[in-house]
Image (cartoon, rainbow, N blue to C red):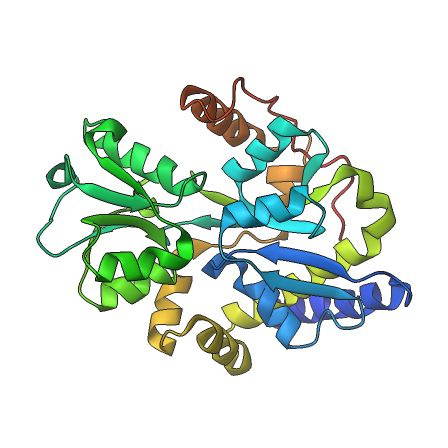
Length: 318
């Protein structure tokens, strides 16, 4: 039997076994995310019914900052966030830990500009829109560094995620730091891409975060979230027509655009996540340290968090 088919059957069997272990009276666990291609497998899993028996609901909020706020306030139980957002959370309260590494952005985040701008240098003194308190500022900072510039060289315009496409198309911005699917929509309309996360490989990572105080209570549901998610990932990677159609319907792009968007992220497999999170020397600790120091330099937190502060206190839940 081909290895990829065997792996798919193994995960589907694990999903069946995990769902059988979830108590029927479990409360509905709310998982929150903002729009981003790397989080879409959660919605595919939900739409295919993988979470129905586990009492898990995936809900989309309008921005990463709203997801973080809802998580802190207990409105949602699990949060899909960029690593920098997770660090901000744990700086304020050490009750958070990473359950899973969902993806690395490999071109999905980008700086796009109006057609009259063809380089990062050309944006000096121009209006650049981005969502405050999100990974966009990091991407712009890295682009500036690599072009011997400073983020202060740009006129930063805070723009909420759900207003970005409108503000750009109405001509209120010269450039925009954004991500898929907004990035793909605007490129289709003729915008220029000047920089992307592909130029800083491995630096923008998305994670699934839970609260330490609730892990024991909801362990079976957390496991169900992961097995459903991994089943959906396998369907997407196999270009299963049902999964692709669900992705296209949710994001509003064409099938060709969707397949291109999927090429702009890297979704780690179980063994990669084991190395990053659950090994004796988890490799994600170095990224936590690097990002924590960056956030401190930017004044977004007052001191770096410990590199092991978000490391899971439990064994790999699969």
